[in-house]
Image (cartoon, rainbow, N blue to C red):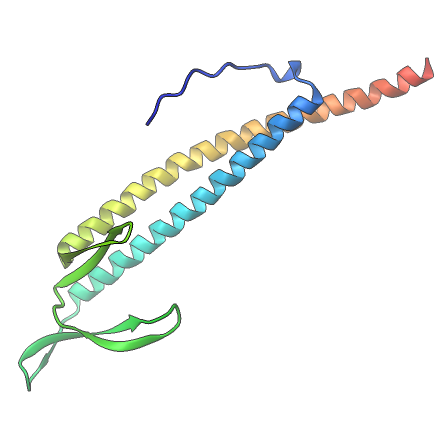
Length: 166
């Protein structure tokens, strides 16, 4: 990670209503972006968990032996689209192709593939927990800014009728 210069803290009470609105808008955008990132990480983790389940399931179920050719094959459903599958056979049930990211695929045995997916799932779980804490802190900061802004707007609104009466 890169180090950031230390940030100066500013008391919210010293900011004007338009400045508080700008801070609120920035915090809103940050929370929205972080929430979207959280959703993407959770989806990626779910994908890896599903891959892990498939690898473990395929390695635990017995393959079938074709008596005519004496080859061991495993029947599977091959996805053509998100909703269309066709029957297929794995020529080597103990080997799988693993997507290691950015369009690169590696052939692994099922044990190595399971270890890879377990590590990825654990790593994403840690990232999700860190992101949850950040989102919570930003949300709390947003609530504080909204409360201070509301108080300033109410104080400004209460001061106007007195100024008009004078």
